[in-house]
Length: 420
Image 1 (tube, rainbow, N blue to C red):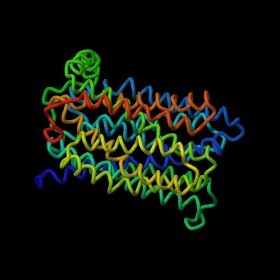
Image 2: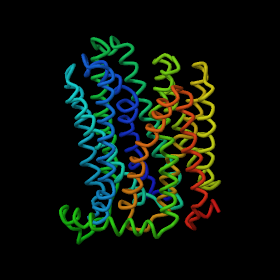
Image 3: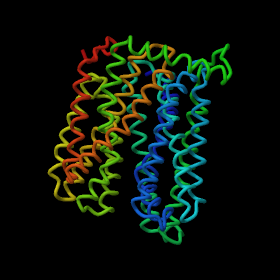
Image 4: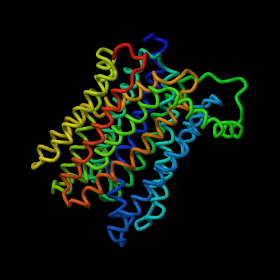
């Protein structure tokens, strides 16, 4: 990588450091617990779970519909950074709004969560597509892995501080656990905003001199969707990869979302589960970076296969879990491959897409990721309801890794000479 590219690469990667705080502290950490215990005070537990589930599904559905349209708009107007800024500000402001949301105000809390989630997931379309602006194809693996690695590290650092605030609020001059969590949400908003600045100030995006306004861009983007989908169908490697990605990333997302719930169903302490979450974050940082080099040396697709094999093994292992120390081991192994599978999938897809259509094609890429966030949890839930066995429910995820890996064998692009 040339010296002139290193600066923009780091500026771009630091956005992962910035927004991952929302994924760890808000989505995976505090929001579900605080929503049930504080904002939904007096609401039956089953009802609050329904509210949370509907809110999460609504946010995913909005991004599912808008992602390809937004990506096409960015390509037509040359305004990826501008649209990313709008979604970032939406996420930051709504996350900060949690601080001022009072006890029992669950409608406001879930409304802010939906909007903040749209800001987070919607912005990923533009952020991911900017990888083609800051690096060249032969560097995609390492650059993508750097982003994910910094995301794991940054999200883990702030989560560790936030956990310390809740366990020892008096150390931070706070009155109690509730106030500490409220301040944690505000910390996430400030962290997200502050560490996004390098990208917005340091990454250059070539402007198109005849770029249309947003109304024309939106109208053109809608008309372009049909042609884009036809283009994807005509590019067999792209189409088959998106199907494979939909299946195996569904498994990854399901493990991320359901691991804590699975541990609770086995009777493990919540403090142990939070510790395991931190373990995944800090192991995920060097592991994601290492996977970038592994993909460049051994072949991107081979490295993805390795990650999927490990995931399949861990999922099968989950059926036999008995002790908390085994859960820690499982978390450590997941940390070794989670970021690698995600980052190499992004860089592999970047090689498959045609020049000048990164936003448009990454819109579909992120759309598949959001659709995947719906199927897996339903599979786990149905299996648990039908069998009454939490162990069988987590074992059902194995189908997604096997099916996704099998489809991936059908992807044979010429863009990745290392994988053959």
